[in-house]
Image (tube, rainbow, N blue to C red):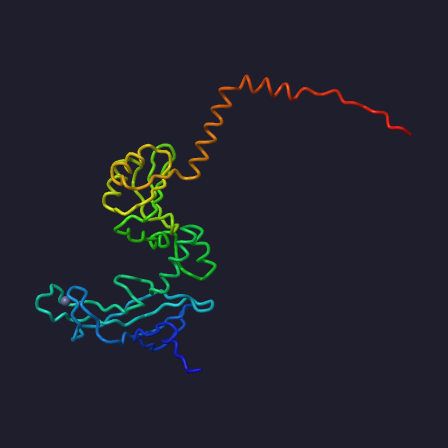
Length: 274
Ligand SMILES: [Zn+2]
């Protein structure tokens, strides 16, 4: 078993050195210095050769035991010497640790995002409080970013509407049925919007849709080769609606039968021989 420093634990493979760890009103402040190779200019990609200045930035890190951890990181600002690049200087970012304007280490951000994905805003905040993670509802919700939409539609595409505001505003959710994953969300449930999406994202072979005729129109128009499938829930709903209608039409007839069957038959009592 090899010796391990706090820098190895907190910043593995980043070239960040830890100078000191201090306790300050119940918080652990990790004084760290960027000591890795110079960064690349985000404008032109050239590797920097000259340091312009250094500055401190504060990053919230995952807690250690019962203590909050804050990293006070001394980072560098480099010159970009490439003449054609519009940037004169740029601030360095440490891969796997920092990002531009970020006030959380990337590990902390990932942890909070995991909470936000599972629980959302308010319940997430309650869990964070119990886990000693400092995060309010707004921060958690801000961390929820939609994943990029693929260029092509999934092979089996599910299309369904949902209410943004019941009875007034609806949107459409598109699902990769085979991967059970949301692919995109459309702002309404019109045929035009879905048709435009299907034109822009070809490749759907099977499209499962609800009963809305708007979707069917869009599929016929923009993905005529795709096989349309009514999904199971809507088929069952169709069936139950049809059944209800039929029962309603024949209610007098049904009542007559029901009354006949419900007539009490005279119980036959037999004397049990002693
Ligand atoms: Zn540059």
